[in-house]
Structure formats: C-alpha cells, structure tokens
Amino acid sequence: MSPKSPGGYKMVLVVRGELRLTPGKAAVQVAHAAVMLVEAARKRQAVVLDAWFAGGQKKIAVVASNLDEMETLLRVARAKGLTTAMVEDAGLTEVPAGTKTVLGIGPGRADEIDAITGDLDLL
Amino acid sequence: MSPKSPGGYKMVLVVRGELRLTPGKAAVQVAHAAVMLVEAARKRQAVVLDAWFAGGQKKIAVVASNLDEMETLLRVARAKGLTTAMVEDAGLTEVPAGTKTVLGIGPGRADEIDAITGDLDLL
Image (cartoon, rainbow over all chains, first blue to last red; front, side, top):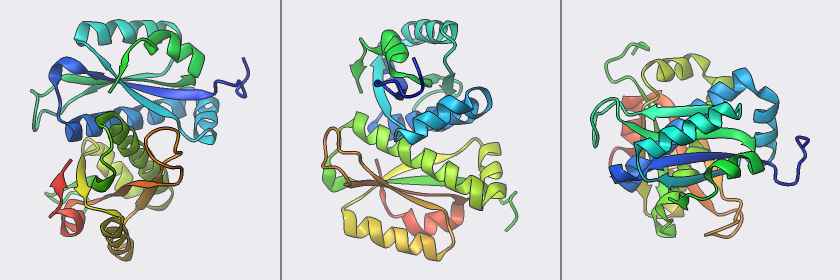
C-alpha cells in the first residue's frame, strides 16, 4: 500500500489500565510516548513520519489490562517493523520509578496498527 | 540563569476545562500539543529543547477554565518569548472542528513557565 493509502497513518498510545492513573498523569505519559515515537521515527522512518504529519498527526489512546498484555503488543509491533516506545515513569508522583506506563506504536499504516491494537478499549 | 539552573526545563499543557473532554480525548490533545511544541522548539530554541530532553522531557498537564483564560495565557507566554502551540481539534469526535482544546507552553525554564501557569489546577 502506498503512503497515500485510504486508511492513512496513525499512532496508538496504549495505557496500562491496572495502574489506574489520574487523567492528568495518563495524559502526560501519553504525550511522553508520542514525543518518543516522533524522535524515533525521525531516525528510522522519516517518510512515514512526514506522511503522518501531513495527515494531521492522527493519534488514539487505548487501554491494555496489564503489563503482560502491553509487552505482548510490543513484541508483535516490533516484529511487524513498526516504531515502538515504552514509557518508564520517573516515579516522582503516582507510581514507583521505572514503572512502565504507556506503550506507543507508530506512526504506521492504520491497517497494520489496527491489526494489533484494534480490539482494545478507548482510554 | 544557565541551562543548568536548578529548576531545569519543563513543558506545560493547558487543557480547556469547560469542554469536559474524556480522559482519552484529553490525553490525545495533550500529546498533540507536546509534539507541536517539540517541532516548533527544534526550529526556534534548539538549545532549550536539548536541555529539556536531557532533563527527562518534564511535562505537566493543568486546566484553564475557558478559552478566554487560555488566550490570555497564550499572549503572556508569547510576550515572554516562550514557545507556544494551540491545538485546534479536527472535530472528528467530541467537539466541532476548529475547537481550541489545549494550549502548550515550552519547553522553557521552569521558573519562567511557573510564573505564568503555576496557579492552575492539575488536570
């Protein structure tokens, strides 16, 4: 599929539901993942990054039940060649330092990412 | 103050409280602002951006009551020379297209940003 595929490009931010983060904490961790993904994609998939920006930098935030589920999604996304980022919190507030809070996937083709995260509930 | 000032660097994301966005929508809009700020700062304040990354890309999400308050904060931040970004939603879901949802300020010196947004409640 070309960069002009109808589905376009997206980024998905998977929040670890079991941590029950406050909305503000979740928002900051999601933003952290998005920035990490942009930095990583600039180095490894600049054409995809540009296409994603051109399409309005589409993002979606969803929830995984627990760390096991997040790590499974991470492995699958990596195996597909997608850009990934796992946020580890600095631990200054709600959770211990090093706690994995959000998995970011993309930017990538919407159909490829949906095949991995399409069944997860919205945040 | 030098880039090694004790307060360090931060980014503040100001969510428009009156819209009562869902946590997931707020998180995505906050992430959108953060990415816009990083892109803008790379062009106009690369040294500050690098210092902010080196310090762990510190972010905080807060709430403004309404659009008037957000626009006042935007003017003050711009007058101080800070990097700013106003997110206008694409309007695919909870709010009409073009609705201003989040104001991003920074990265910048923590003391400078706190002087502008330090009185706002956390998201």
